[in-house]
Length: 277
Image 1 (cartoon, one colour):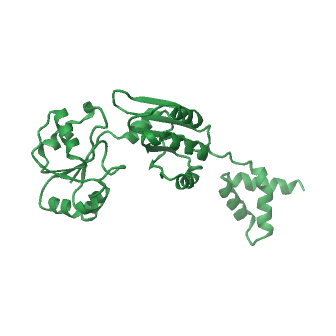
Image 2: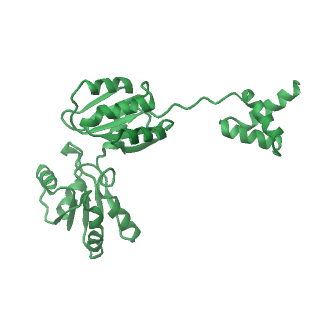
C-alpha cells in the first residue's frame, strides 16, 4: 500500500513519483473521483487502475477491503484530495491497520499545508504541534484553548474561511491579543496570501474582510517563564527541610527541579544564607 501526497494547489508541485503511481497503481483509493480525474487531466496522466472512493464517511468500512486487495498483491495508492493523507484527511485507519497487519506501507511524500504554513510563517520551527481544527462550539473551543495557553511549541491550525474570524477571536481571548501569529491563505495558489501580525490585529483584519480559500493559522508558542533566582527559593528549601524528613540536598534538588534552576546553585545559596545568620 502506498500513501500518496498530492499538490495542495499548484500542479507543478507534483513529483515524478506521483505521476508514476497514478499510471501504474492497480487500485486508486481517493476521496472524490472527480478530483482524481481533474488531477490526472491537469498532469496529462492516464490511469488504468480501479478507482474506489475512500473518504471520511466510509474509510472505516473500506479498511478490510483495501487490506484484502493488498494481500492479493495489488498496489493500492491511497490519496486525499490535496496534501498528505492521514493529516486531517482520510487514510489513518487503513494505514494503521495495514501496519498492524504486517503489510508493507510506503509513502510518496508531497506538499503539506501544515509544513508549508510553518515554513513560510517566520515563527520558530524547531518544535511545533499540529492542532488541526478547533472545536466549533464556543464553549468547547474555549476549554480546549485553556489547555494550549502554556504550550511552548509553535502551533499550526486549520480553519474554514467563514469561521476564521470567530476562530481568531477565540485565539485572541484564550492566548492573548499580543501573541504573534500568521494567517496563510491559498498556499501555492494564484492568490496566495500570508498575513503576519499579533492575534488582535489578525482578528480585526478577519472581521473586516471577506476571507476566502484554504486557511492555515500558525501561532507562536507561549513565552518561557523566567526562572527565579536561587536566592529567592532559599525559604522554600528551608521550609521543606523543617516540615519533612528530607535532607538538605534532597530538598534543594526537589525545589530546584520544580522551579527550573540549578540544584548546585540553590544548595550553595542555602548554605550561604545559613552562614549569614
